[in-house]
Length: 636
Image (cartoon, rainbow, N blue to C red; front, top):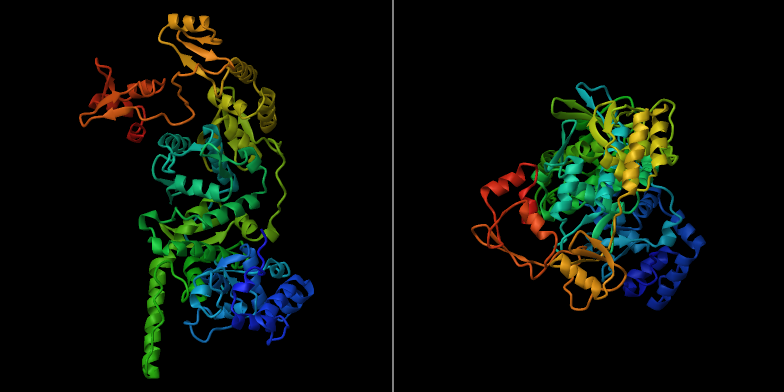
């Protein structure tokens, strides 16, 4: 919905409206109602808007361009930070004047606060609040510009680390395919993911631990990070069944231009709130908002780097250049206040200011620099946007990869959408061996081809230049369930290998597809359980219709169930029907919900007793854990 100033104007005091009218060419002596009418007419007049913007300095127009770039609404402290990052502002007389740049924008009717009070003089309203601009003004503002960092790339010692785009895409396809295979992610009433779904997704991604290691770099809590990122990017959406499900298929995602994919993911990582790059040293809640601003500042700083793909940028020189732009105005935690003076002589004032500056710098090195380094070694590296130069375990430099330059500089990106399907390449993208193993060459395989492999094969190994997959009955079923036909499966395998598939591969895959066609999966089925086969026959004699399953179950037709029968909806959580004592004795109350699942689940963890109860023992729990089950599954 467009944002206009019209509805906010009546809430602004007359003393604040008059400077706005004057800035827009009106009479300063108008009454409040006349001021409002004049401003509303001015905002509607494209020529009047153009004339007003023409009076602005280039750096002032850039401020409006920044606001437009972030969607027209911005926290005023963030706006101050972005102005400093872009570097196109007049010099400030003292570091203490942090809010000088936008004060006049309120007075001239170019910005308005979202607070209930619209006083342009209130520090809380336009210093710590949220402001916005009229979309009719922003429509005539050009693109943002920035002052490049005065830092040169150089040849640095040490070992280089980077992730090829195909490795990045392979991991993304694996994650999206795993979520699709699970049929979405279910949540409990407390809005936490169900333990079973979380366990399955962790196993599918091999994220058993709470940290992922990529080329020696630690990525904490990858599951938490990626679920929030995909949700912010709108690749995951909540459906009516309180599930997180994919908004588009992995194959559709793979067809997006790669720079577009990365921009969406970068924006989402910048805006994550529950995940932090250094979870072992997480910021306190009071300063967590600074983390989002710090990520945004780093991204803008990467944009402002010279476009020189040859050398690396020293991390030490980079952080010093960034500090010179924002260090006195921004910190990831508490920012020491500017010293207060009362009748001190100039020499003492200068000494206090110098001490304050030294404290600011020391705090930056201690707090901000490690956070910046963690951003480079976690999501920016995972996405393949930066190449890192390491001296042992110490980060000493970095540079943007080709994908990074395309992502942060859209003018360089070749945003041609990938062709649909597993397209043929100049050389074979993979080799399909007679034993059902597939060796994919990462320098040849395309994003849609990777999506195809993740869809219908199991990845077993990943190396620097190759990825190994295996066709299994389960993986082929998964591909067929997702919509592939047997003919498409064979055709795409052959296109990628550019050679005829071996006879046994073709025969076996067709046989697996044929077996699948004999399996009938019923959704939303209504099944009636009888106490015995004789009771089932009696029910049929009384008019029930359906298909007999085993000896005691009847799959009902469209007729409704008999009134008064106890029904269980397996699509929802089962009602509480278990009590457990301190000795591990589990009492099941089947009268509450005589379902088909509880007994089977208890059998995996406990031993039945003659009284019809279940007993947790050391042996029963140990035997359940050995195959890979976790105690969290039992507790859930």
